[in-house]
Image (cartoon, rainbow, N blue to C red; front, side, top):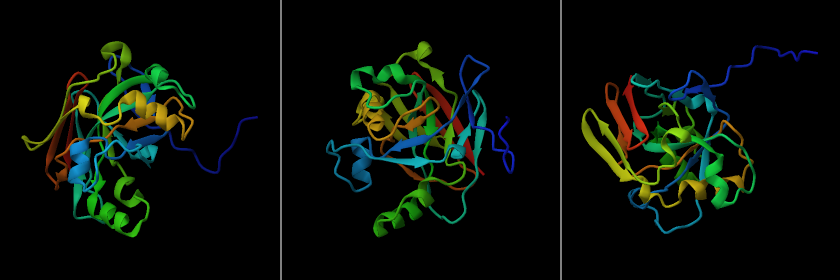
Length: 234
């Protein structure tokens, strides 16, 4: 018997996969907080290697951008201080629970360039009051992402420049080697808290230099060996 719904369920968000006509269906979006020491300092935190912490965005917050295209980011309501954060995104292709660090890389399908857009004023207010971060982090289209590049094409990048420019002026620069928690460590740790499944995305943290954008700004993101992402604020 075919299952019926009271209305048509939304289609899954599909991210382009480089070299393929198939798309990567997004299940969950996990984000790692303060995973670069310099960014932790600029946000007023101690960069010592404490256990990683995570927050989530809804899957429909993901806003895919095709190779060579320019995406758009609608400036969200309720905020006057919206920040960019460029990040390496890890796409999970094989699920698991309690994954050992030495086996974690085998669970990765590929990598992409992403943006964790943040209503900083709302996030800061949430921090002060000890409330959840959803209003600052989980709003509509808050997770732009470029095409996912399969592991078979690039391997597992452990170093390479991570940069973001606004209107041609560089604002963020770091290196994948600066990650406090490596990709295998992130995957392993997260799998002890949640059962990972194919379709999960992990936004791995951002380098220092985060800052605001306004309508009309053009964000140019790049991760060496992975790709580029260009998004205009509208």
